[in-house]
Image (tube, rainbow, N blue to C red; front, side, top):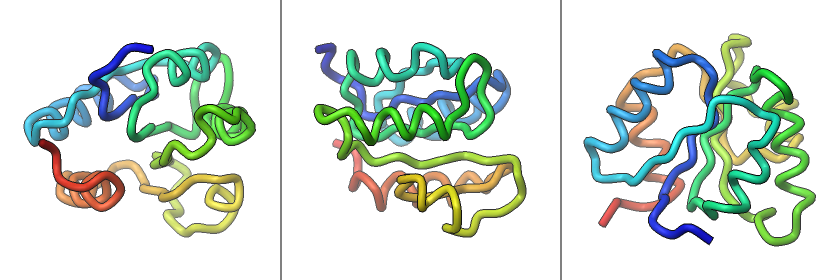
Length: 125
């Protein structure tokens, strides 16, 4: 297991990934990035992040498929997941029913992202 990762961001859009990295590392969070769903579960298992920020629409495997596999994996099932979606609804509905802890619509407000991460993990060291 690799230590030192607070957050694993799984996002295929480079501009969004860079924005999230900038916002959260500026606050002191240690962040790793993965850009597709196909090997995302292996990456989560390897890094054991404290939080996964997961895009719904990813190449190779959707974020919802990754989320279902994560929740079914006994070693990482309890990992908090913040889903990012461009589908327009931030309601808890179907995505939360699939196991996400929180859902945020893209584009998101920087302060809302920071607040969500802080609420899910507490303040960074």
